[in-house]
Amino acid sequence: MASSNIVFGIRPVVEAIESGKQIEKIFIRRGAEGQLMADLRDLCFRHRLRVQEVPVEKLNRLVRGSHQGVVAQIAEIEYVEVQDILERVPEDETPLIVLFDGITDVRNFGGIARSAECAGAHGIITSLKSSAPVNAEAMKSSAGALTRIPVARVGSVRNTLKALQTEGFQVVAATEHSRKLMYDADLRKPTVIVMGSEEKGISKEVLKLCDEQLAIPMIGTIESLNVAAAAAIMLFEVVRQRIGD
Image 1 (cartoon, helix red, strand yellow):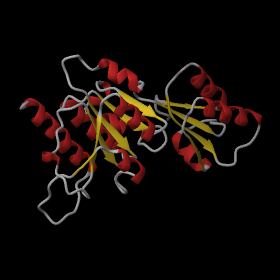
Image 2 (image 1 turned 180 degrees about the vertical axis):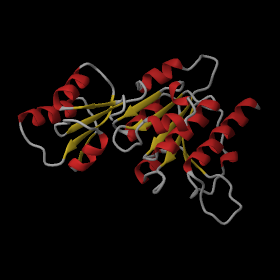
Image 3 (image 1 turned 90 degrees about the horizontal axis):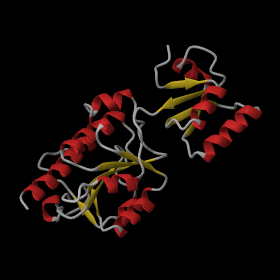
Image 4 (image 1 turned 30 degrees about the vertical axis):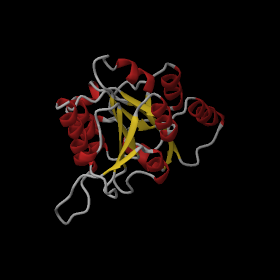
């Protein structure tokens, strides 16, 4: 049985898109052809939706019924624009945003959201293309945080960071490759903390844009932390500095 956030069939999916429902991802049967399918692909392109071509077996696992070669996942949350995040920051608070550069594990997504909400972060920004979906598992991992902290999806992480820098934000990369420790940076300013993917870390293109590259001090022999654990440590260093201000 399909879950409540699944829509399938060409016409129902088109109606979901046209009605303004926020779509997490659309799965289309690999090799699917025909005018209706072509129209659907064009509609997805115009709405900048994530489309993944998959074998029919995957679609059959997702739903039982006549899916006509297309299944859509409806977002569990209502995404916002980056400007909405900025406008919601109270005047007496210093903005703090977490940006995901390629985090694909839903449990890490939810875990970081939980830490971000607990640390008083004002929003999360993630990539439209290379990011974990906010599904039921991510919601569970966040312990409700994803219903409280606003999340924005952007087409270009780099352009978003540049825009935030013009707004007065410093962009801080969390990376184990830096010699500068997080304790040696001033995190009391408006700050964007960038967390990289589980496997590759922060991309070189994004890293070049960062104003600071900061490491968490490590004593043991394992070289790096899980990204959700690293994000929590970075976030609460911000809290420590700002509470002591």
